[in-house]
Image 1 (cartoon, each protein chain N blue to C red):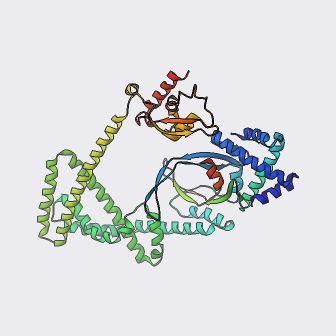
Image 2 (spheres, rainbow over the protein chains, first blue to last red):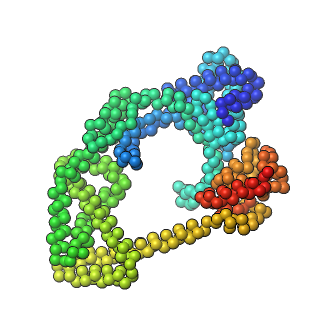
Image 3 (cartoon, each protein chain N blue to C red):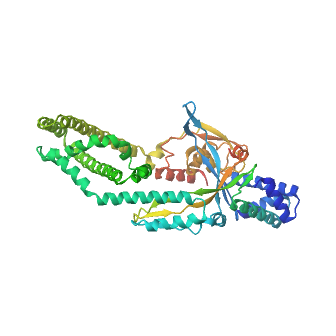
Amino acid sequence: MNHKELLTSLAEKTEMSQKQCQALLDVFVDITRKSVVEKQGAQMLDLGSFNVREKEQKIMFNPLTGKRMLIPPKLVVGFKASTTIKNLIK
Amino acid sequence: MTKNEIISSMSERTGVSRADIRLFLERFNEALFQGLNEDQLVKIKGLGTFKLVSVKTRKSININGGETIDIPAHNKISFTADKLFAEMVNDPLAHLQVVELSDTPSEEDDPAEEGGDEYVASSRMKKLSEEAEVLKSLIADINGLPSVLQIEESEGEKIGESVEEKIEEPEEEKIEEPKISIYTPITNNSDNYLEDEIKKKEMTYGGKVGRIFLSSIVLLGIILGIIYWKRYVKDVKQEKTTQAETHEIINLSKDKESVVSYEKDTSKDSIKQETELSMATINESEVQSAKTIERETDSNGKLNIEQMRKINVDYSVIQGTETVRDGSRLTMIALRAYGSKDFWIYVFLANRDQLGNPAQINTGMIIKIPKIDKRLIDTSNPDCLQYAKELEKRYVK
């Protein structure tokens, strides 16, 4: 299901126009993103929680050239599904 | 930020009432589930992709009781952030770049210090760079101290002199072995080399004596490794020729024993060990050859397409049933049952009484999953896929 299909199904369910849905979804995404970027995370009991996780730096080998590379530390988004969702999709 | 906070800030920005937004989010969740169930995938622009991943049944051990338990097959959700989202989150560390490590330590320190000024994780990075320095000093020590190696080698040769050339190699090993065995926990695992170095860090700070000591241990480990390898190759060769020759080896080593017994009792013991060792390696190679034979029979066990055509599959033998959920497909049932979507045709053929064509699948339908010969649903055998396609052509117009 891509973004468009999601919007169509949302519009059907909420009985709003697709444009309205798009606007609300954008705001939701924006707020979630901001809250995650500020490292507060976003916890939704019915969906799950988004958090920032830290990946440590590591040394990797390029198997072709045999050179060692130092991969810098990185911040990534982590998502944990809530127990309600987990039970639903079992 | 909790859901309530998200709702209030959303209603502030859009002017829509809180109740409406709460409803909207609920509908959003519903749409998300629906999408996951239908396509196993939902993409949301600006946020990322939710994916439904099915996990197979696997065995695990109860930590408290120690009994083996089965973790039942289930689905889980994986989330991959959008490129934009990922970049936003990684923004504080975006300036860090992949560095190629060379033999000089100066380059390695740069990224660590850059990050260290701005980021809290700097302490970790500093630790790592310190460890790298210790490693490097160790390597330098090894390069600078070839004398240690020479001394030990000459020691080995002195005792081996009176014996024949062939015995010299194992002789060296024997003298080193008792020394090494004390420190085996340190030298044994070359995989944990880095960790070991970290443990050794404090010791190396203790002074040069400690460093020389450690580097000599590392050297001994390397020498031992080379000798073992040589011996292994030798033994395999000997094993390949004839058994009579292996008897000769044992006889030879007995001869060695008599020769060395004139010298020291300790070396006598060590030669006994050696004969045991050579026996052990011979046994190992025998086991290996047995394994290769097993593999050959495995590859013979794969059926080719002609043999498959001869097999009559009994679709009335059922290994289980599955109730169709919203939007499920035969391919997904096959994936869960046989580990590959390609074998859905077997599921279809078993349910031809209720299914006219494969697309005619409805929620709530109970689908029978037939028990299929494992050789027919071998994902590693391309003939299986070909045969499944052939069946599709034959039964589905």
